[in-house]
Amino acid sequence: MKDRKLLMIPGPIEFTPAVMRAMGMPTASHVAPNFIEVFGQALERLRQVFLCPAGQPFVVAGSGTLAMEMAAANLIEPGDRALVVNTGVFGDRFGVILERFGAEVTQVCAPAIGDAPAIEEVEAVLQSGDFKLMTITHVDTSTAVAADVKSLAALGQQYGVLVVVDGVCAVAGEEMRQEKWGIDLAITASQKAIGVPPGLALIVAGPRAMETYRQRDRPAGSFYADWEQWLPIMEAYEARRPSYFGTPPVNLVWALNVSLAQILAEGIGARFARHQRVSRAVKSAVAALGLEEVPVSPERGAVTLTAPYYPDGVDSALLGHIGSAGVILAGGLHPAIKDRYFRIGHMGAVNESDVMATVGAIETGLILAGCEIEPGTGLAAAQAALAKPA
Ligand SMILES: *Cc1c(COP(=O)(O)O)cnc(C)c1O
Image 1: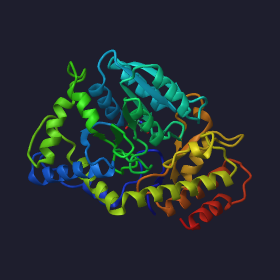
Image 2: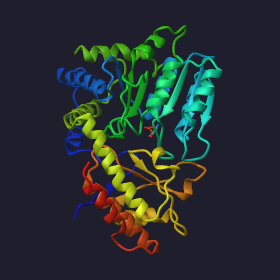
Image 3: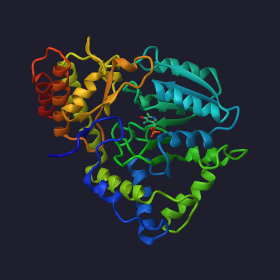
Image 4: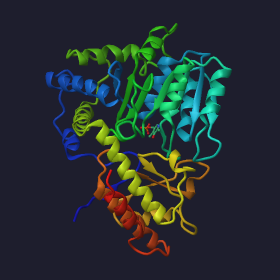
């Protein structure tokens, strides 16, 4: 029997066998020619996956939060004004990080949990002040709300502010076209839709972000996050030259390069379409099982993640039942509703069988938790959605 349950949380996710093999390779020197080649390729491929041909990629050991911190440390100087489009916990977090580097932060918050601020409201705030930068959480992992990044980024460009997208639960799963949409800096972390075990902070900074960094009056208020250290390293690896500032996580970079190659081989458009298909199937099943979702409407909902409320009379013990049926899901994260909902991550290498296994386990779990549902209800809905032509 397989000793492993299916991991369907919003990161870490299920990784492909090729990615896991790269993690298990004998670790090379960080200046070995074969590793330099791999790091150089990974940087080139990152630009392609972010759809930002003119961008400067950064690959640094750390989690997604370090990527957020790098954005703030390098783009913000004390007294700068920053606007946070807030759709949940990760908007709160970005606000705190920006403040730590001296920004005056204005939060434009969603009117309710599961909703997003109206574009008009964001525009009114942009009009009212001289903002240097705005942040958008593409998918807030605490609410499963997806922001309208394309429209918000266009607005940011119109008002001349730097557009920073926290794409940690989105890049390589949700459609994001960094250069075309006018996103000045986008970040993600390895363990989410980009499909690599946890440990890498990933950034692609566009020309305006790099120019803002070059125009700084004083050095960044962080030593480790300062691009002063990392830019020469990224440039050296891409030029296939050895260099050193902090030891790179060799096996993770190898694994990243493998995953990026797999993403590009699938085709970024095909990958977005697969994620949509999978998401529709999960969401049809959830609806058929009579579960409400945290996002207030389907338009607000993410593609990479589904967040259903527990049905009446059921609590987080449900996750134990689903686990005993073979699938690991995540509990709630947003403090105001933490005990009332759960989260299903479906990104990266996720396929149709994963959907059926997950929906089957949710159904079994609900029955074990005492819900009166007809076995097969969710599965039938998922199957019908998957059988529909694209
Ligand atoms: C997961 C996540 C983060 C934080 O990433 P860590 O790797 O856990 O530090 C930030 N923003 C969003 C939207 C996320 O989903």
